[in-house]
Length: 326
Image 1 (spheres, rainbow, N blue to C red):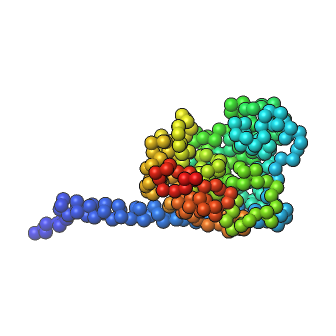
Image 2 (cartoon, helix red, strand yellow):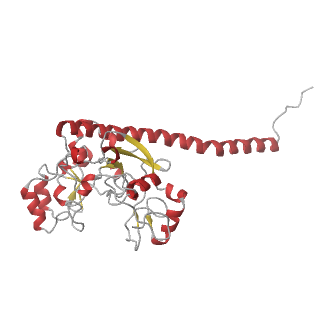
Image 3 (cartoon, rainbow, N blue to C red):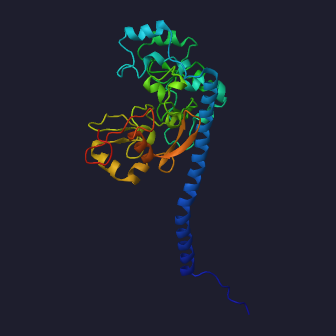
């Protein structure tokens, strides 16, 4: 006589599925944090390598990398009404692609992949790679279209950028999400000092190298005029009074503008702010004395407000939000 085969009942099967779903819901965040922790460590290693490259450079030259000393170049920009003022270029005297810090310390690094953060959701690409070896002639021929972006030397991005057609009259690629995957050189870490004109600076002129940032993570907005751009690199901009239409690529998810009506949510809700950080509520920084460390975003802002994170100035927040109101 054949015995009746036993199997799962429908209820038992549903119970097993429910248990698996519960376990998955519990474990997936753990796996995600473990993966991001590994990426944070890799990113910190990258930043540390860049900082060590600067230390080698400092050993050779005992000062920050140079600014533009070509009188003809400086006079050209002065004649256009550009010095170090916004509205023309952030620092027009330093648009020479060979004076970009990653280019200068490239001989100490040997591997450009370390400039990419594995957690960057919107890495910043090379905006322009000069097609001619003579970047100065090309800039003059195409003024002002090709002058003020992030420019890189001829061949810097490899064969992809060498073969790229003109974009808006300028050789290279746009720095947006539609082109960053085309193979152009991407840089997610940048310096802060060049934005403040701190070039040619002797190391002895630095008050506290251990609290002076030389490398910080960056996002779609590559400028460092405000501390929140380092603390929250996955944001395009924080708008205090008005929103520039089309200023960001995002639509409802980072990167996006924090608009005027969202500012209070941003500064009053830590979880709201943390989604704009890159590594679990913070980011990696490299310092002039040679050390690199992860720092919580809110701690960065507190340090900058206390004058303990050079060269970043304090962050101004709305009057009814806790923080610096000077």
